[in-house]
Amino acid sequence: MPLDTRELFARLIQCEAGGEGLEGMAAVATVIMNRATITTGEFSRINKGGGDVRAVITQPGQFTCMMESVGGTYNSQNVYNMVPLPEHFEIADWALAGGRLIGVDNSLFFFNPYSPTCPTYFPTRVGVIHNRVGEHCFYVPTSYYAET
Image (cartoon, rainbow, N blue to C red; front, side, top):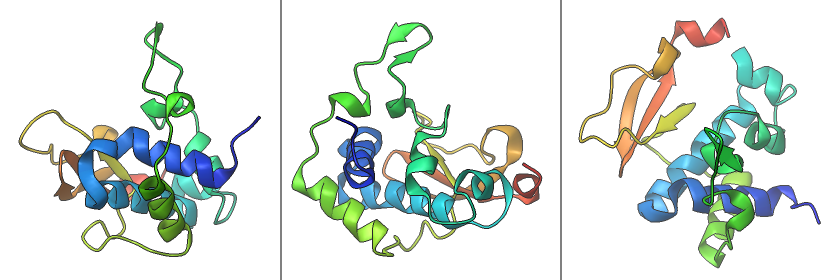
């Protein structure tokens, strides 16, 4: 049975940031909603003019947790293996209802650099560092993003 958008979102939050506490999970949810509502660049085309959260979540190549294999190897940490807890659904519901984490602001990109410092630019220079929440670095779009 296919997952509805709410459950898929909760599973993605758990998979991408489950070890980052409520603030880290809310930060990741904020990025996903920022992508779903932006009106310029690549994510505007993906979100079909605004609001298609599912299209943002399932966009190929964006979230490792959406991949069943990575580099030809089975990825056991994928959304299909997650069993979201009430807190994951609560964060998904909060974000879907318009909640956004202050400090993440207009960030469209995040990743864990496995380093105590965040690189200045997101790969391909489409984002510049804005903030760090837990182990994840968050990036706001640069002028290069608008050209995507």
